[in-house]
Image 1 (cartoon, rainbow, N blue to C red):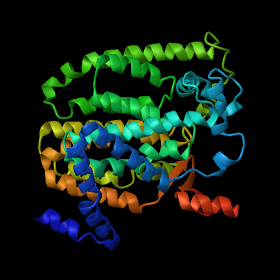
Image 2: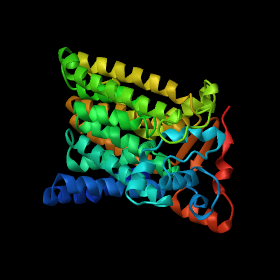
Image 3: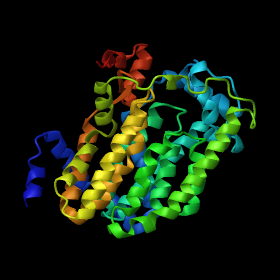
Image 4: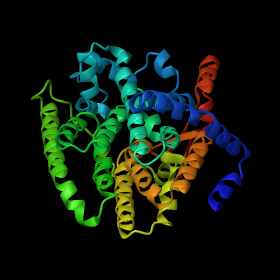
Length: 402
Protein backbone atom coordinates (compact mmCIF):
# COMPACT_ATOMS: atom_id res chain seq x y z
CA UNK A 1 0.00 0.00 0.00
CA UNK A 2 2.85 2.35 0.77
CA UNK A 3 4.38 1.82 -2.68
CA UNK A 4 1.10 2.44 -4.51
CA UNK A 5 0.47 5.56 -2.46
CA UNK A 6 3.92 6.92 -3.20
CA UNK A 7 3.30 6.51 -6.93
CA UNK A 8 -0.13 8.16 -6.77
CA UNK A 9 1.36 11.11 -4.92
CA UNK A 10 4.04 11.59 -7.60
CA UNK A 11 4.44 15.36 -7.75
CA UNK A 12 4.19 15.96 -11.52
CA UNK A 13 0.52 16.06 -12.63
CA UNK A 14 1.30 15.31 -16.26
CA UNK A 15 3.26 12.24 -15.17
CA UNK A 16 0.22 11.00 -13.26
CA UNK A 17 -2.00 11.40 -16.31
CA UNK A 18 0.49 9.60 -18.53
CA UNK A 19 0.79 6.81 -15.99
CA UNK A 20 -2.98 6.37 -15.88
CA UNK A 21 -3.18 6.32 -19.68
CA UNK A 22 -0.49 3.66 -19.92
CA UNK A 23 -2.22 1.52 -17.31
CA UNK A 24 -5.55 1.72 -19.13
CA UNK A 25 -4.50 2.02 -22.78
CA UNK A 26 -1.32 0.76 -24.39
CA UNK A 27 -0.54 -1.85 -21.76
CA UNK A 28 -3.94 -3.47 -22.24
CA UNK A 29 -3.39 -3.56 -25.99
CA UNK A 30 -0.01 -5.25 -25.56
CA UNK A 31 -1.50 -7.79 -23.14
CA UNK A 32 -4.24 -8.64 -25.66
CA UNK A 33 -1.83 -8.91 -28.59
CA UNK A 34 0.40 -11.19 -26.52
CA UNK A 35 -2.53 -13.39 -25.55
CA UNK A 36 -3.84 -13.64 -29.12
CA UNK A 37 -0.75 -13.76 -31.34
CA UNK A 38 1.99 -15.03 -29.06
CA UNK A 39 5.36 -13.82 -27.88
CA UNK A 40 7.37 -13.22 -31.07
CA UNK A 41 4.82 -11.06 -32.97
CA UNK A 42 4.29 -9.04 -29.81
CA UNK A 43 8.03 -8.53 -29.41
CA UNK A 44 8.33 -7.27 -33.00
CA UNK A 45 5.38 -4.92 -32.46
CA UNK A 46 6.86 -3.59 -29.21
CA UNK A 47 10.27 -3.13 -30.86
CA UNK A 48 8.82 -1.27 -33.84
CA UNK A 49 6.58 0.95 -31.70
CA UNK A 50 9.39 1.78 -29.29
CA UNK A 51 11.71 2.68 -32.17
CA UNK A 52 9.11 4.95 -33.80
CA UNK A 53 8.54 6.82 -30.52
CA UNK A 54 12.30 7.03 -29.97
CA UNK A 55 13.13 8.53 -33.37
CA UNK A 56 10.11 10.85 -33.23
CA UNK A 57 11.34 12.39 -29.96
CA UNK A 58 15.01 12.56 -31.01
CA UNK A 59 15.34 13.08 -34.77
CA UNK A 60 18.60 13.84 -36.60
CA UNK A 61 18.87 17.19 -38.39
CA UNK A 62 17.10 16.97 -41.75
CA UNK A 63 20.11 18.57 -43.42
CA UNK A 64 21.89 15.23 -43.03
CA UNK A 65 19.39 13.67 -45.44
CA UNK A 66 18.42 16.58 -47.70
CA UNK A 67 21.80 18.20 -48.42
CA UNK A 68 24.91 16.65 -49.88
CA UNK A 69 27.74 17.56 -47.57
CA UNK A 70 30.84 15.61 -46.53
CA UNK A 71 29.95 13.78 -43.36
CA UNK A 72 29.52 10.34 -41.84
CA UNK A 73 26.30 9.58 -43.74
CA UNK A 74 28.01 10.32 -47.06
CA UNK A 75 31.01 8.18 -46.14
CA UNK A 76 28.68 5.37 -45.05
CA UNK A 77 26.75 5.65 -48.33
CA UNK A 78 29.98 5.38 -50.30
CA UNK A 79 31.07 2.36 -48.22
CA UNK A 80 27.81 0.58 -49.03
CA UNK A 81 28.83 0.71 -52.72
CA UNK A 82 32.50 -0.09 -52.03
CA UNK A 83 32.99 -1.64 -48.54
CA UNK A 84 36.79 -1.52 -48.85
CA UNK A 85 37.05 2.12 -49.96
CA UNK A 86 39.92 4.07 -48.42
CA UNK A 87 39.04 7.71 -49.20
CA UNK A 88 38.35 9.06 -45.71
CA UNK A 89 39.11 12.27 -43.90
CA UNK A 90 42.43 12.02 -42.05
CA UNK A 91 40.62 11.93 -38.72
CA UNK A 92 38.32 9.08 -39.79
CA UNK A 93 40.65 6.46 -41.27
CA UNK A 94 39.37 4.05 -38.63
CA UNK A 95 36.14 3.75 -40.65
CA UNK A 96 38.09 1.37 -42.86
CA UNK A 97 37.84 -1.14 -40.00
CA UNK A 98 34.05 -0.83 -39.66
CA UNK A 99 33.10 -2.81 -42.71
CA UNK A 100 30.41 -5.18 -41.41
CA UNK A 101 27.28 -3.11 -42.14
CA UNK A 102 28.59 -1.75 -45.49
CA UNK A 103 29.44 -5.31 -46.54
CA UNK A 104 25.97 -6.55 -45.60
CA UNK A 105 24.46 -3.63 -47.52
CA UNK A 106 26.62 -4.40 -50.54
CA UNK A 107 25.72 -8.10 -50.50
CA UNK A 108 21.99 -7.35 -50.18
CA UNK A 109 21.99 -4.78 -52.97
CA UNK A 110 21.41 -1.77 -50.73
CA UNK A 111 23.24 1.25 -52.08
CA UNK A 112 23.84 4.68 -50.63
CA UNK A 113 21.59 5.71 -47.76
CA UNK A 114 19.53 2.54 -48.31
CA UNK A 115 22.13 0.81 -46.15
CA UNK A 116 20.63 2.62 -43.15
CA UNK A 117 17.80 0.07 -43.34
CA UNK A 118 20.17 -2.54 -41.84
CA UNK A 119 20.92 -0.27 -38.87
CA UNK A 120 17.25 0.59 -38.30
CA UNK A 121 16.20 -3.07 -38.53
CA UNK A 122 18.93 -3.92 -36.01
CA UNK A 123 17.56 -1.17 -33.76
CA UNK A 124 14.04 -2.61 -33.87
CA UNK A 125 15.36 -6.14 -33.34
CA UNK A 126 17.38 -4.93 -30.33
CA UNK A 127 14.28 -3.44 -28.72
CA UNK A 128 12.33 -6.62 -29.44
CA UNK A 129 15.02 -8.66 -27.66
CA UNK A 130 14.93 -6.28 -24.70
CA UNK A 131 11.21 -7.00 -24.46
CA UNK A 132 11.82 -10.76 -24.58
CA UNK A 133 14.46 -10.49 -21.85
CA UNK A 134 12.21 -8.45 -19.57
CA UNK A 135 9.36 -10.85 -20.28
CA UNK A 136 11.25 -13.57 -18.43
CA UNK A 137 10.67 -11.74 -15.14
CA UNK A 138 7.77 -9.35 -15.81
CA UNK A 139 4.25 -9.40 -17.21
CA UNK A 140 3.91 -8.54 -20.94
CA UNK A 141 2.46 -5.08 -20.32
CA UNK A 142 5.19 -4.21 -17.80
CA UNK A 143 7.93 -5.60 -20.09
CA UNK A 144 6.55 -3.29 -22.79
CA UNK A 145 6.87 -0.27 -20.50
CA UNK A 146 10.45 -1.22 -19.67
CA UNK A 147 11.33 -1.66 -23.36
CA UNK A 148 9.85 1.70 -24.31
CA UNK A 149 11.61 3.34 -21.38
CA UNK A 150 14.99 1.94 -22.46
CA UNK A 151 14.27 2.82 -26.09
CA UNK A 152 14.02 6.49 -25.08
CA UNK A 153 17.69 6.51 -24.07
CA UNK A 154 21.03 6.35 -25.86
CA UNK A 155 20.44 2.62 -26.46
CA UNK A 156 18.13 3.36 -29.39
CA UNK A 157 18.67 7.04 -30.01
CA UNK A 158 22.40 6.97 -30.78
CA UNK A 159 21.93 5.26 -34.16
CA UNK A 160 18.89 7.46 -34.85
CA UNK A 161 20.72 10.72 -34.18
CA UNK A 162 23.88 9.71 -36.04
CA UNK A 163 22.87 8.15 -39.40
CA UNK A 164 25.50 5.69 -40.54
CA UNK A 165 26.81 4.90 -37.06
CA UNK A 166 26.49 1.13 -36.40
CA UNK A 167 25.72 1.27 -32.66
CA UNK A 168 22.43 -0.59 -33.12
CA UNK A 169 24.24 -3.57 -34.63
CA UNK A 170 26.62 -3.73 -31.66
CA UNK A 171 23.62 -3.54 -29.33
CA UNK A 172 21.95 -6.37 -31.24
CA UNK A 173 25.03 -8.58 -30.83
CA UNK A 174 25.09 -7.91 -27.08
CA UNK A 175 21.37 -8.66 -26.76
CA UNK A 176 21.65 -11.90 -28.72
CA UNK A 177 24.34 -13.02 -26.28
CA UNK A 178 22.16 -11.96 -23.36
CA UNK A 179 19.18 -13.88 -24.74
CA UNK A 180 20.97 -17.06 -25.85
CA UNK A 181 24.43 -17.63 -24.33
CA UNK A 182 25.78 -20.14 -26.84
CA UNK A 183 29.55 -20.52 -27.04
CA UNK A 184 29.36 -20.48 -30.85
CA UNK A 185 27.43 -17.23 -30.73
CA UNK A 186 30.03 -15.77 -28.36
CA UNK A 187 32.76 -16.75 -30.83
CA UNK A 188 31.07 -15.52 -34.01
CA UNK A 189 29.56 -12.31 -32.65
CA UNK A 190 32.75 -11.31 -30.79
CA UNK A 191 34.62 -11.66 -34.08
CA UNK A 192 32.03 -9.73 -36.12
CA UNK A 193 31.75 -7.00 -33.50
CA UNK A 194 35.37 -5.96 -34.03
CA UNK A 195 34.70 -5.21 -37.71
CA UNK A 196 31.57 -3.30 -36.75
CA UNK A 197 32.46 -1.10 -33.76
CA UNK A 198 34.94 -1.89 -31.00
CA UNK A 199 32.63 -0.26 -28.41
CA UNK A 200 31.13 -3.74 -28.15
CA UNK A 201 33.96 -4.49 -25.71
CA UNK A 202 32.57 -1.97 -23.20
CA UNK A 203 29.43 -4.00 -22.63
CA UNK A 204 30.89 -7.50 -22.95
CA UNK A 205 31.83 -7.96 -19.25
CA UNK A 206 28.24 -7.10 -18.31
CA UNK A 207 27.01 -9.89 -20.59
CA UNK A 208 28.89 -12.48 -18.54
CA UNK A 209 27.66 -10.89 -15.33
CA UNK A 210 24.05 -10.97 -16.57
CA UNK A 211 24.15 -14.75 -16.96
CA UNK A 212 25.32 -15.37 -13.39
CA UNK A 213 23.36 -12.59 -11.67
CA UNK A 214 20.48 -14.88 -10.65
CA UNK A 215 22.62 -17.94 -9.81
CA UNK A 216 24.41 -19.06 -6.63
CA UNK A 217 27.96 -17.82 -6.27
CA UNK A 218 29.35 -21.36 -6.45
CA UNK A 219 28.02 -21.80 -10.02
CA UNK A 220 29.54 -18.66 -11.50
CA UNK A 221 32.77 -20.20 -12.83
CA UNK A 222 31.02 -23.25 -14.27
CA UNK A 223 28.51 -21.04 -16.13
CA UNK A 224 31.12 -18.66 -17.55
CA UNK A 225 34.40 -20.30 -18.55
CA UNK A 226 33.31 -21.91 -21.86
CA UNK A 227 31.64 -18.74 -23.16
CA UNK A 228 34.58 -16.63 -22.01
CA UNK A 229 37.07 -18.77 -23.90
CA UNK A 230 34.86 -18.71 -27.01
CA UNK A 231 34.63 -14.92 -26.81
CA UNK A 232 38.41 -14.54 -26.41
CA UNK A 233 38.96 -16.76 -29.47
CA UNK A 234 36.45 -14.70 -31.47
CA UNK A 235 38.09 -11.43 -30.40
CA UNK A 236 41.52 -12.78 -31.39
CA UNK A 237 40.23 -13.64 -34.86
CA UNK A 238 38.53 -10.27 -35.10
CA UNK A 239 41.77 -8.46 -34.25
CA UNK A 240 43.56 -10.53 -36.89
CA UNK A 241 41.01 -9.43 -39.50
CA UNK A 242 41.53 -5.81 -38.40
CA UNK A 243 45.31 -6.30 -38.79
CA UNK A 244 44.78 -7.55 -42.34
CA UNK A 245 42.56 -4.56 -43.15
CA UNK A 246 45.08 -2.09 -41.75
CA UNK A 247 48.10 -3.54 -43.57
CA UNK A 248 46.48 -4.23 -46.94
CA UNK A 249 46.12 -8.00 -46.72
CA UNK A 250 42.38 -7.41 -47.35
CA UNK A 251 41.90 -4.61 -49.87
CA UNK A 252 44.20 -1.60 -49.86
CA UNK A 253 46.06 -0.62 -46.71
CA UNK A 254 44.27 1.89 -44.48
CA UNK A 255 46.07 5.26 -44.44
CA UNK A 256 47.90 6.09 -41.22
CA UNK A 257 47.26 7.13 -38.54
CA UNK A 258 44.21 4.90 -38.13
CA UNK A 259 43.17 6.44 -34.80
CA UNK A 260 44.56 10.00 -34.69
CA UNK A 261 42.29 11.03 -31.82
CA UNK A 262 43.83 8.37 -29.57
CA UNK A 263 46.74 10.73 -29.02
CA UNK A 264 44.36 12.45 -26.62
CA UNK A 265 43.94 10.30 -23.51
CA UNK A 266 40.80 11.99 -22.21
CA UNK A 267 38.16 14.04 -23.99
CA UNK A 268 36.14 16.69 -22.21
CA UNK A 269 36.22 17.42 -18.51
CA UNK A 270 35.01 15.58 -15.39
CA UNK A 271 31.88 17.73 -15.58
CA UNK A 272 31.13 16.63 -19.15
CA UNK A 273 31.77 12.98 -18.19
CA UNK A 274 29.30 13.20 -15.32
CA UNK A 275 26.72 14.92 -17.51
CA UNK A 276 27.13 12.30 -20.25
CA UNK A 277 26.78 9.58 -17.63
CA UNK A 278 23.52 11.00 -16.29
CA UNK A 279 22.03 11.94 -19.66
CA UNK A 280 22.80 8.65 -21.40
CA UNK A 281 20.05 6.68 -19.65
CA UNK A 282 17.96 9.52 -18.19
CA UNK A 283 15.75 8.23 -15.34
CA UNK A 284 16.96 4.62 -15.58
CA UNK A 285 19.53 5.39 -12.88
CA UNK A 286 16.64 5.20 -10.39
CA UNK A 287 16.44 1.44 -10.87
CA UNK A 288 19.94 0.35 -9.73
CA UNK A 289 19.95 2.93 -6.94
CA UNK A 290 16.65 1.62 -5.60
CA UNK A 291 17.83 -1.96 -5.85
CA UNK A 292 21.06 -1.10 -4.04
CA UNK A 293 19.16 0.03 -0.93
CA UNK A 294 16.71 -2.91 -0.89
CA UNK A 295 18.72 -6.06 -1.66
CA UNK A 296 19.04 -8.71 1.05
CA UNK A 297 20.88 -11.66 -0.54
CA UNK A 298 24.68 -11.82 -0.42
CA UNK A 299 24.91 -12.78 -4.11
CA UNK A 300 22.82 -9.74 -5.06
CA UNK A 301 25.23 -7.46 -3.24
CA UNK A 302 28.22 -9.00 -5.03
CA UNK A 303 26.50 -8.62 -8.40
CA UNK A 304 25.75 -4.96 -7.68
CA UNK A 305 29.37 -4.29 -6.71
CA UNK A 306 30.67 -5.97 -9.87
CA UNK A 307 28.08 -4.13 -11.98
CA UNK A 308 29.21 -0.83 -10.48
CA UNK A 309 32.82 -1.76 -11.26
CA UNK A 310 31.93 -2.55 -14.89
CA UNK A 311 30.07 0.76 -15.15
CA UNK A 312 33.07 2.70 -13.84
CA UNK A 313 35.48 0.88 -16.16
CA UNK A 314 33.14 1.41 -19.13
CA UNK A 315 32.77 5.10 -18.38
CA UNK A 316 36.55 5.46 -18.13
CA UNK A 317 36.90 3.77 -21.54
CA UNK A 318 34.21 6.07 -22.98
CA UNK A 319 36.21 9.18 -22.12
CA UNK A 320 38.99 8.13 -24.54
CA UNK A 321 36.78 9.03 -27.52
CA UNK A 322 35.05 12.27 -28.40
CA UNK A 323 31.45 11.01 -28.55
CA UNK A 324 31.27 10.02 -24.89
CA UNK A 325 27.47 9.80 -24.80
CA UNK A 326 27.34 7.18 -27.56
CA UNK A 327 30.02 5.07 -25.96
CA UNK A 328 28.21 4.94 -22.65
CA UNK A 329 25.23 3.44 -24.47
CA UNK A 330 27.06 0.11 -24.49
CA UNK A 331 26.59 -0.09 -20.72
CA UNK A 332 22.86 -0.81 -21.03
CA UNK A 333 23.16 -4.49 -19.89
CA UNK A 334 23.71 -3.12 -16.36
CA UNK A 335 20.07 -2.03 -16.27
CA UNK A 336 18.89 -5.38 -17.59
CA UNK A 337 20.85 -7.01 -14.75
CA UNK A 338 18.88 -4.87 -12.31
CA UNK A 339 15.66 -5.86 -14.08
CA UNK A 340 16.57 -9.53 -13.52
CA UNK A 341 17.43 -9.00 -9.85
CA UNK A 342 14.63 -6.64 -8.84
CA UNK A 343 11.40 -8.69 -9.26
CA UNK A 344 12.40 -11.34 -6.67
CA UNK A 345 13.05 -8.49 -4.22
CA UNK A 346 9.72 -6.74 -4.75
CA UNK A 347 7.55 -7.44 -7.81
CA UNK A 348 5.07 -4.62 -7.23
CA UNK A 349 7.80 -2.05 -6.59
CA UNK A 350 9.71 -3.08 -9.71
CA UNK A 351 6.59 -2.58 -11.85
CA UNK A 352 5.85 0.84 -10.36
CA UNK A 353 9.48 1.87 -10.76
CA UNK A 354 9.48 0.91 -14.45
CA UNK A 355 6.36 2.99 -15.00
CA UNK A 356 7.88 6.03 -13.30
CA UNK A 357 11.10 5.61 -15.30
CA UNK A 358 9.12 5.54 -18.54
CA UNK A 359 7.12 8.64 -17.65
CA UNK A 360 10.26 10.56 -16.78
CA UNK A 361 12.03 9.44 -19.96
CA UNK A 362 9.05 10.65 -21.99
CA UNK A 363 9.11 14.03 -20.27
CA UNK A 364 12.87 14.58 -20.28
CA UNK A 365 14.36 15.92 -23.54
CA UNK A 366 17.29 14.10 -25.09
CA UNK A 367 20.69 15.77 -24.76
CA UNK A 368 23.94 14.29 -26.03
CA UNK A 369 27.55 15.00 -25.14
CA UNK A 370 30.40 15.20 -27.66
CA UNK A 371 33.72 16.11 -26.12
CA UNK A 372 32.92 19.15 -23.97
CA UNK A 373 29.82 20.12 -25.97
CA UNK A 374 26.22 19.52 -24.97
CA UNK A 375 23.71 19.26 -27.80
CA UNK A 376 19.93 18.99 -27.85
CA UNK A 377 18.22 16.32 -29.97
CA UNK A 378 15.04 17.86 -31.29
CA UNK A 379 11.77 16.03 -31.84
CA UNK A 380 10.69 15.46 -35.44
CA UNK A 381 8.24 18.43 -35.68
CA UNK A 382 10.94 20.85 -34.53
CA UNK A 383 13.39 19.33 -37.01
CA UNK A 384 10.90 20.12 -39.82
CA UNK A 385 10.42 23.68 -38.56
CA UNK A 386 14.17 24.24 -38.40
CA UNK A 387 14.67 23.01 -41.94
CA UNK A 388 11.80 25.09 -43.30
CA UNK A 389 13.01 28.23 -41.50
CA UNK A 390 16.65 27.70 -42.35
CA UNK A 391 17.63 28.23 -38.75
CA UNK A 392 18.86 25.76 -36.15
CA UNK A 393 16.90 26.09 -32.95
CA UNK A 394 19.17 23.52 -31.33
CA UNK A 395 22.16 25.85 -31.66
CA UNK A 396 20.58 28.02 -28.97
CA UNK A 397 21.00 25.14 -26.53
CA UNK A 398 24.46 24.16 -27.75
CA UNK A 399 27.20 25.30 -25.40
CA UNK A 400 30.40 24.13 -23.79
CA UNK A 401 30.64 22.38 -20.44
CA UNK A 402 33.42 23.61 -18.16
